[in-house]
Length: 344
Image (tube, rainbow, N blue to C red):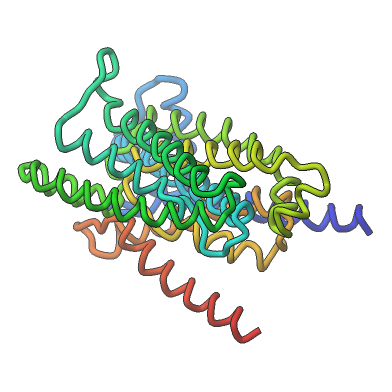
């Protein structure tokens, strides 16, 4: 039975991977400029070989290599990272409403990025990474501050205390963000568009940073799948089977903070991906985190790629912020999931 179940879930993952690949190529083809699927291989091969494309492929090459492929790569990696972080947070805190925004990490990362945009903060030798570095630093600082306050109130670092402090910190960060925007009215348009979430203008450097972060943090989270299963049952149960509750909680929170900080610095505030995607995936593969985490990774990539496709095609030539699309879709899906779970 065990081998049959493993083969079954192997097929499920193969389907997830195939769907992700199909959606990826569909998002590359579709947009304000349609690129035929048959031209993709030729254009990519010419780019890899560093040879000029034929005149009839010049437009397709400029659109795909310069704009579409890096953007879709970043969208897929951000979606995968946010969904993976949300699934890990829901298991760790044993709360279906948990994700990065619940514990205040997203708000902290957003505050750091807004400060960098408002005051044009750069770092010597890294002029392109000011927003990213500030978002990551503020995400980690927010985590340390939240955990420090939670520890002063509750030495056991219970999940309820962490969530309560996280909600309070999110309100505080939003207030500080409003003050910063008041003093940077000349950059109000760019800050407002960024806070709604957008991956327009993403490049291969952004994709490399996202991929490296996801590889490192995702691997650590996958290695803690068994501990997350124990947390989902209860902290007391986790202690009884020998799990170092405090160490595992701290490790998972740090990995989630790094994922969210990098995603926020590149794509802005994108809601509901980490909240809704794990719920939908859980209906297919079950609550076991050994299956849930990789399935959430694929599903988050698919969800955000489709949302980005809608954002840039529904009102051509205008483009909607991707955060607006995910909020609308996510709110409707989440209400349906909640209603269905209450009926059961």
